[in-house]
Image 1 (cartoon, rainbow, N blue to C red):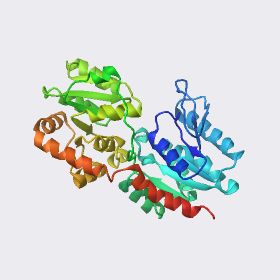
Image 2: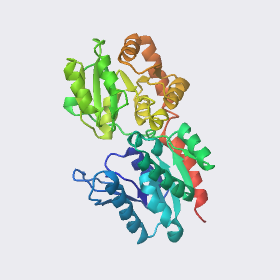
Image 3: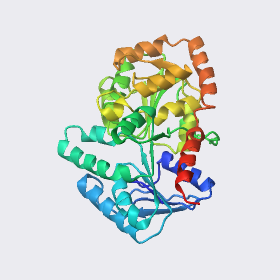
Image 4: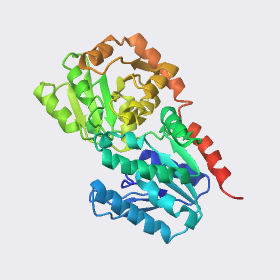
Length: 364
């Protein structure tokens, strides 16, 4: 059983998790929530969506956890894989009664998230849940080394790193005709959560200083309306193009056509400070250079593999200067390095270690 708090459609990390466990011979049930806009999905394993009646706030989380509790209570599983803190409590509470192996996969530093900033009472509730539930997990996984070190120190236990990297055998797809008409030499920002403090506003403003390139923004998020309004106000409609969220296969093909990929999260929350956005690996697998903010995990990847440029600050002028200064020769070198780097930066390379840890927990 794999638990998530989303509607299953776009969560590629969880899809890769299920596929990996399926390939190891496990029977999989993926359990998430039902939304009005939920699309039909076809997977090679069972998927279930629960109606939680609310879309956000404490009523959403309370209802979600109650629905998960009763769903697990009346069924039997050998392994429960809980994704993020908002699904962990019922799984931890029932672990002893139901006698399953509990895996906790924390996709972020949850209690340091932007949404909890300034909401101390709510943050304390999540911290209490974490202190109760995390020790009950048999295997603890997170998304990068920095967050693993925080949790390892906090709970005095081993925390495995499973970075959200593409599979080594990603299948090629075709782009819709309208996407084939995108401009040459475009800078790409992609993401499912283009939210405040992720550099989107500064990136749009940077194109006031850039005439030789276009900016293409693909995805969704709370800051997109602000970015679109800013582009209008600054008269950048011809330079900045917005594309709705794409299927993963289409996004992969579009990314390959980009001149440069950007990831500009700012260290204004602990969760962003230690983040390692999925898009950095998507860019590397597309064999394009990257331009990133000076976050510890981004800097680690870019400098270790020499695949792009690390900014010293996320400002419109700094972004523009870095883009304009990137020569064809330097870009070609970064592309060659990305081609090499993607051989080792794969989902399988991290997942193999996690699978070993899981198998040690399962009785023979």
